[in-house]
Length: 508
Image (tube, rainbow, N blue to C red):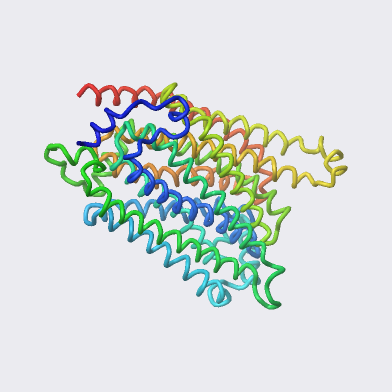
């Protein structure tokens, strides 16, 4: 009996079961490995996201202003280069080779950084005196020079950023969209996020414990260097676990016709010829549907980037030490995971009950509401100074926690609503556009979002002749409002096109 028949003949879920666990028993063999692949990828994403920020923001001669320079001058060009490379490799190698190969490259780099590069930084980085001389000679480049001054940290930051785009946004979700049917996606995708976001709780706890080791080490041992070794070792173990599960799915589960994609059991039309790199970009960027998905990704990237840089400035004021900074980010990661799980539990039925639009519009609504509250406190914080001082807290401490609340609520709605609805939007597309269009949107589009926010900051730094985050913060607040409005408009237009494609697919 085919999987489609089994699904159609299975009894309807009760209301409680439909809300909590809309998965049939026979589907677990495919569902659970996918959940845990996402778990391990998201675990690494969380560890690396915290570690990369702690490295570059607390480095000597650096600060939060380095983030915009890194995203614009380093991460964005490398993301474009990756998509060019990926579109070529996708025409040569099988999906499995790419997945295993890219994870292996990431693991090798992170281990080499913590065990080889970091213990010998004096052999790689220019001296602080030389960096100060260059800063004095070129004062308008003060926001860029630290990228060179701590260039191995910049490389670590770039690779950590690419992990999220390459392994989670591109390779995992591309694989999910290929092997999971539309009917399954409506039930599975929110649950993937629910189970996988337990990874944030685990990663946050591990991040906090492995960073808070200063008092337990012998004298003379670099606590941050030791934390890096532990953290990257955990990343390597999780990456290997993801590879094992991926191979199990490919070589065991999907060999069973009940779990194979629907297309594999049908006589398909002659496949389209694979496109060259130039043809792929032309095919992708002349498609309005893909352009709208890109606008969603870019809108999220710009808005969260502009809010985060102000927030991270306040974190460094409170926690200038690398271990302390990373330990706080561990707490933040746990709160993000817990918030995401709660939001998924309460909102995962939005698409099924109310439609794609309402699932997709939640994240921009939360972003503009919480972002507005955060900037309001930043600009009017002196009103609360005497009250905060009476409680024993500084304005920076309060701003840090208000920004953290804004951030974990926004990221929670991203994981619970934005990501599943975005991935569902790819499902009705043809295989070529689904694969290469997704590569361009998730890697280039994702980086364009962050690079766009970084470009705004760089222009403001140069134009105002400063590298002080708080000087440019009022301008950032206004830009966030405009970007979120455009993001919400793109959701509205894409919703109509998505529903039309789904109806067309059901009619054919």
